[in-house]
Length: 157
Image 1: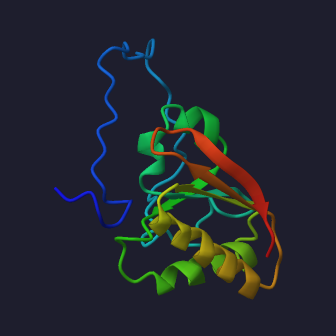
Image 2: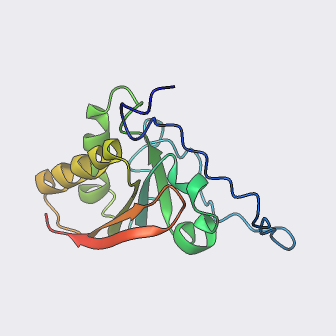
């Protein structure tokens, strides 16, 4: 397989056989408080978005981060999207704007992977926020392929 092409599609084997696998003790409680979660499917004015702290995350983030539920999802409403593979993304900006203006969300946190294509989700959210009537705090969190937070910052809109 070629090592060239999109960094988000490059095959990387991150297994480390010499390290023991951490196993969780007991059942880990899900922090998911709603359904659906895919951005195409969520109605932006669903009751769980009203006045909420919203987490908009790239699909891969939760799989890369072992403690995603407890550390990032807890207490938040969520939507997931893939800026590379999802069709019809023009609807996404409308939904984000509706969260801000109609659902009157408190904050929006975007969690994206470090690969270039994920930046499209952040750009879309910032553009939607700029076109909204209300102004809210937006945080960007960039996650490494190994699940570490590389960058966390408030975004100016």
